[in-house]
Length: 122
Length: 107
Image (cartoon, rainbow over all chains, first blue to last red; front, top):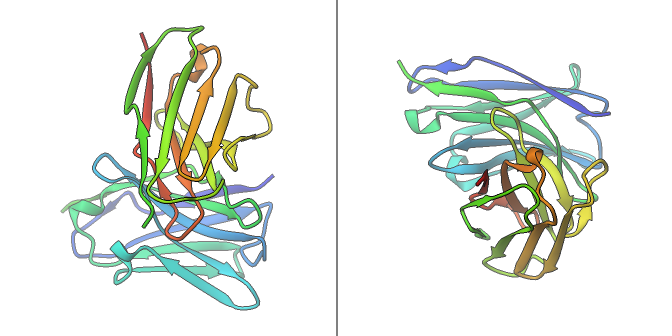
């Protein structure tokens, strides 16, 4: 059974970098049949896909246009996890952030991490 | 980006009622449509994939249909544990996009 465990701070200062990690158990970040994604949820934006990383003989990333200039998603094969970095945050980046696995055969998202409420405030 | 529009945004119903939630895509997404259930303070949970395939463990009172641009999620007889928010999602093209949600409340 695949499980995802998120970690990272719940409070970030404006203009700083939001950093979250998603640890994977029961699967591999290097799996050829998965894409590892970050999604956020806020009352104003609803559920918003931010991006993903995946391995198909080499590493690829896809990012949402809305955050493309500020986001980095990196795999860490040594720890079997992946991370989210979002630079230059503003209060509009306040949201619950989720990691999730996209099954590349069925294209659904399952499982999801437990979610991390990140508040951008000084 | 493909826009996903759910209706209604909220719905009040009673235990035992039959309810239908609609999801419309701004262009054809074939059957790359999934439904999630979310309860307060928890992550979305996959209910149904590929428009009509029930996930393991999900009660058979849930059903889905549709292809192309119009999709429905039906709960045949509401149970107390079904009161939650439901989201549709398309994964036909990047970016994967979600509907705005339908909040199902107890009447």
